[in-house]
Every structure is written in C-alpha cells, then in structure tokens.
Length: 224
Image (cartoon, rainbow, N blue to C red; front, side):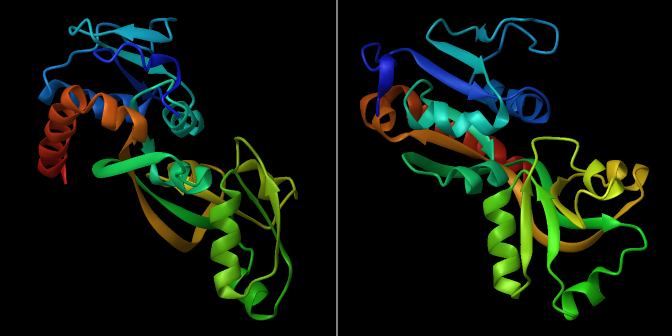
C-alpha cells in the first residue's frame, strides 16, 4: 500500500486536481508554510515544485486523486465527497472536511418534465450521471426504479437530446443548468472537499505529515 515513495520518508507528495480544488487548497498550504511554484493552468507540468524541497504537488484528474493516495503514489490529497463516495474510500484516512469547493449533489430535469408525477406513478426513469453509486443509493432509498447511464461529462446534454429523463450531478451556482433549460428537482446531499491520507504514509511519515494536517485543520475551521 505504501507504493514507490516508501523509501523516501522525508519526501511528501500531495495529489490535487486542477481548478477549484487546487485554488481553494492554496491558502491551506500557505497556512502550513508551503507555496506552490507553478500554476497548473499555465504550466504543462504534472509534478509541481514547492518552496519546500521535500514537498511536491502532482496534478491528476479529480476522480483519480483517491486512487493515487490509496496506492501510495501520493501521500495525501484533496478530493470531493462526491468522488470519495464513488471510490469507496478503501485504504484512505479521511481526517478533515476542509470546507472548500462547496457544492451540492442534485437531480435535475428539463424544464417542463413532470418529475414528481413520474416518480409517484412508478415510472422507470432513465438517469444519466457520473456518480452511479450515489445515484443508485439515492433512488433505491426512495423506491424509484431507474436505469442508470454512465457519462463522463456534459451531463446537461442528456435530457435535451432524449438520452435520459433526468441527471444526477454536482451543482455549484446552477448557472449551467439554467443555461441549458434544466431545473433542480431534488437535493441529494451537500458536498465539500476532504483531506485524504495514505494509511501507510500516516505511519511512516507521521512526523512530516502531522504538522501539515494540523495546519490544514486550523485553516479550514476559519473557512467553515
């Protein structure tokens, strides 16, 4: 589980995804005295140096962060609750909700689609989503029969072209839904991002990791 970095006990690798999570994690890193030297939006580098020679940041897809941490290719990372629920969280220590990249998981349909009646009448709904496990649990708990269609992006398109009756997706402002004539019809859960730590790294590199975890925790409380 501790992967290829187990020999270098002083070297720490943090896995982040580009975009909001990266931007929102920067102040937490600064609270721990760590500054990232490159901007992933302008640099093609996937391994970013910091002001600490023993701390590097790797840029990966959001859905891959838990996997890199689970197998020890990264010692710790930041991942959304949505991603962690799909991953299952195996092999990960999740000490802190960082109160960053807040959004919500919701069901949305094309404006004019009578979702409530369809559900009440026991219709079998086609639902497009990237979050298959979360969607399955949500609809099963409600006793709603669904056919789940796994997509990897542009969720909003599915109801517009008849691929699905509804979507389950992460919503931040709701602007993308409105721009595509979709409306939220059901709130599933609030989402924020969490610190995840490789369990072997927590034992082998505790001396290096613990001060960073504590700095993240103090800074995240100020944001909450």
